[in-house]
Amino acid sequence: MTSTKEKTLHFDHLDFTELSFSRLFRDYLANADAISGFYSHPHTCDSLKKAVSSYKQRNDRTETARIIAEFNAPFLKGQTVDGLAGILAHEDTVTINTGQQLSLFGGPLYTVFKTISAIHLARSLSRDTGRRVIPVFWLADEDHDFEEISVANIPGRDSIRQIVLPCDTCARHAAGTIRVGEAFENFRSEIYEALNPTDFRDQLISILDEAYAPGRSYREAFALLLSKLFSRYGLIFAGSNDPMVKRHVTKCVRTAIERADEIRDELSSQSERLDKQYHQQVQITDSLLFWHDDEHGRVRLQHSDGRWEAGPGLSLSTGALLQKLEETPERFSPNVFLRPLLQDVLLPNAAYIGGPAEIAYYGQMKPVYELFDVKMPFVAARLSATLVEPPIQRFLEELPFDFPDYTKRLEDLEQNYLRKFGNPELDDHFDTWKKRVEELTDEMIGLTGMEDHGLQKHAGAISKEYSKSIDKLRKKMVNAIRQKEEVQINRIRKVKHALFPNDRLQEREISFIYYMNKFGVDIWDRILQDLEERDQDLFDRHFLIHL
Image 1 (cartoon, rainbow, N blue to C red):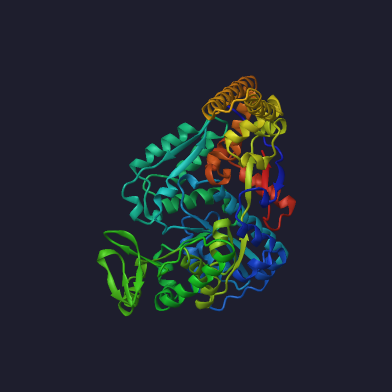
Image 2 (cartoon, one colour):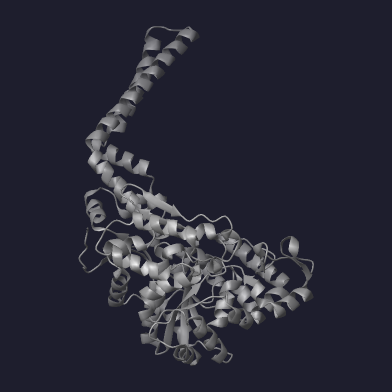
């Protein structure tokens, strides 16, 4: 059994320019002039505080407050539905929200980073503005990309163990409606087997088992897990795959149907403008909607010349589709562009917290908000961080590379190390050797009076063979150095494996339960506490959190 004593975390940071983040993301955080026309607010603390302080909801909040409170009934801890409804209905309350797909057992690190960001900013904004700011996690309960949520990556000694829950039919259905069933038990067992024995393992397993109980929907399980970890900070939940929510946002969906051509044109124009300077994150389609079909699951609604089609089973005029909306609003589902609008219609939402990809597609959306007559929220970057375990920190201090160097391929890191520490001038010496052989060959051809072209060609071939032999000798020397430096090479591999698993940022790959198992289920509380002490206003750098 291993145990980790609680200690104060140490924070370092890097500029995003030192890592592989997009230019659009970097320019947005830097408030570059080129990016200003794509967003409603500059990414500054003052602008965020102003967005919160000045927020006003034009319509009566009573109904939406009751809907959100009822939605949270299964997740509330120490609070009643009536109490939450009263808080949300108060004109002085605003929300700051984030969201994510319903990844099994919570998903990768960025899930908790988003949650931590919402909680931390809500607390600091409540203090600085005097308003009650509530952190909200939007459950992407209508998303049907089951393949993306069904994977958990748990680090092993030398590799990442990828554990997958197979399901042949799940891709056709909203992920939030799928239930913990018999197949999930194999997935559960593999996860628990991959988690090393620690003093925290039993407590973690108890939390996971309580959330992912047999028969429970993935939406409820995911929310219960986050609720167990963060409800004491006032975190609540919202989502769109709910009958009351569907009925309440029909006006927004109706606009998406009635103004489909205008919406497509505005999205296309804005996206083209963005693409000229940066990149287009999401491809534009002819509608913002999906249709829930009993046989085929969630199917994209396609619109052309006043007709709407969803697979072979639906072909309707605009008028007929609007009638369907009145009769069965639960059959309509938002795409990536409509979902933010539903959030901002349902919630008193002053700000949204997202990662680089989300910030990019918000840049495509400004004119769409205007078409829907909805105010675009402040868009804040979430916490971006790498967790550095103590052994990895020791290796970082001993090895001759800086953190950003580990973004390179492992093979390049190894070669750089061997060349630098085996003999820094080794390549130069071998190149000089080959060059002198070539020069000597040319000299001897002249001295011998070798005028025959065939003989000259043969002499050149001998020179090339000699060069090949020199290359082989160089390779043998590098291998000899490699064997001598194998301990350090292994350390390079371990650091690369820990910081950039599968050549991606750690936060996008590693399941956050791995760190709870190794460093305690309260690890996120400790990070929140450190952020509070740092008085971090906006997340405009990549953090290295030394555990």
